[in-house]
Length: 157
Image (cartoon, rainbow, N blue to C red; front, side, top):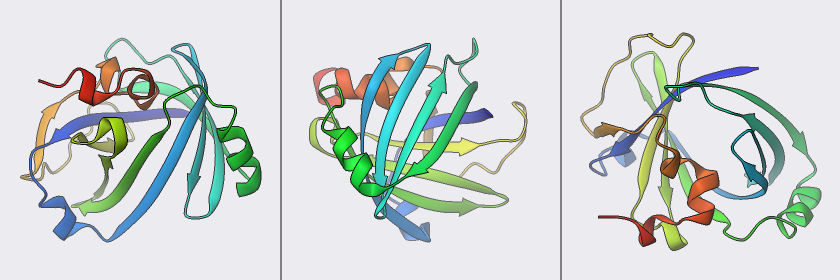
């Protein structure tokens, strides 16, 4: 499947008031090669295995395949993951016709809050909430796989 998404920094906590759901997510990477990232995730007592391909030139489009796996298998695979697990809370915020997933990071990435929106076509229009900041689509340092190796606290301004 092809995923089309845009990624933004978040400039205020107002999204928390608008969120209709939140979940803790712990994830690790079995492979962080940009051509084929393999992620293990535990979310809401469920396990997931995800493979992502290389992004398009502007970073909005890339291959993504995901399947649910038993949570005990996901937890076992997390122990085999490369160093640098990602720990975050994801807030689901409906804005107009679109869902924004807002990730508040913890641990070595504490202080970073990023919002993602999935689109059906690259130039699809969407309502822009007041808490949405600078677009960082296509900037690799904001990809979770990179954050696991080069945490936000080590390069933030």
